[in-house]
Image (cartoon, rainbow, N blue to C red):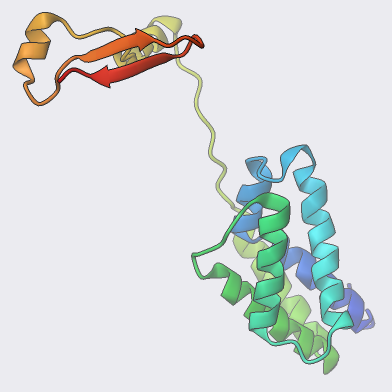
Length: 178
């Protein structure tokens, strides 16, 4: 986008960049909090948040924060308590004000630096085990299904062995022995 780009386009792009680089929304989409259509919900959210500014006059950051909070809760079953939503809302309000005053170049510079900072976002991935034997050993070590032997039960007086009984409906209930 160049200097002649209309302020509305610059601001709508700013909302898209801010929301797409916001870790909370990234986590929600990456982990399927929004269901099968999480990515589409995020894109829709970017559009409606941008339009929200133009449909309401004199928005303050707390109103934007409340609006985004409701969207996150309804669409992604996500609540934000880390303070980042307040910062995001403040940034959006500031950029909206700058665009309204014609300072679109400043907004574009801010977005460019933000995109640079977030280009190296870390992705979490689980490495594949080097060989199956190692993986099987780890799995066996982590299994806790085996019942404790009588020597283990006497060695741990604070942890009496559990008593299991099958209910009429097929469920198994585990109770501590008294």
